[in-house]
Every structure is written in C-alpha cells, then in structure tokens.
Length: 173
Figure 1 (cartoon, one colour):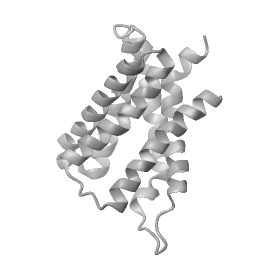
Figure 2 (tube, helix red, strand yellow; figure 1 turned 45 degrees about the horizontal axis):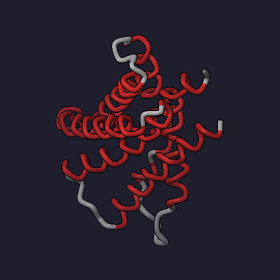
Figure 3 (tube, one colour; figure 1 turned 90 degrees about the vertical axis):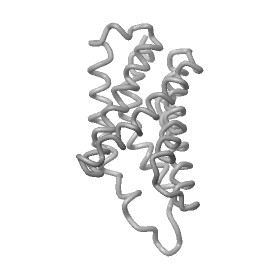
C-alpha cells in the first residue's frame, strides 16, 4: 500500500510543479508547450512504471512517448471534438499507451488481452477522478493565490486509480 501511495504522490508532485509553472509564470497554451509538458509529466509516470518492473530507463522513455503521443492526440482532435472532447480522447489514448508501455516493460506486448483491460480500467477510473477534481484548473485563483497543496491532493486522487490499475499485477507476485 505504501508503494502505491508513494508512486502516485511522486507523479502528483510532478503534476503540481507543472501547474505551478503554468500558472505562476503565465505559460501560453501552445502545442509546443503542451507537448513538452506531456513529455515531462509522463516521464515521471514512466519512471514509476519502470520502478515497478525494474526497467527505469525504458519506463521513462515509454512515458515520454506516451506523453508526447497524448499531447499530440489532444491537438489533433480538439478542433473537431472541442476542448472537453479532446481531453477525454487524449486521456484514453494516454492510458492505453501507458498500458502498452507496461506490457513492453514486462515483455508481454503481444498479449494484448493482458494490457487492454487494465488500460481501459486505468482510463475510466482515473478519468472519473480527474473529472471530480478538475475545478483546480478551471476555477479562478483567489486573491491570496492558488492552493498548491490542494493541487497535490487532487492530482493524487486523479492519478491513483490509473497507476494502481497498471502496476497492481507485479506487486501481487
């Protein structure tokens, strides 16, 4: 249980640092910035998946690929699906890519049935949690500034089900 929590809090911390950077430095939302953000954030997720499988470098590289792919998926469909539709599509794509990364790290990539269901569970469960805490990005900051501790908690809630779904198998051996 402690390992699951540590993994998720690590990713949530990186996500919170990303929020801080976007909000406090007034980063403009461009494709380049979105792709760089996706690569950095998902590198952290890849490190968690790599730690889980004992393949840290491959995990980080797979995470970067999933982050770039997820960001590009968003920008590819946002024009036709709108912002929310683009986020949902990119979120599902990202989790399926991460599930494939885990399968690649376990040398089970060809056994699609072993990673398809955990990927869908990760996408749906983390998607639901992401939706529940999404006000941290859409609410305007109060006069005394954003509460980044709440961002850390919210990101932990949002990432926990997906990370757990993709790493559960190895921790049960």
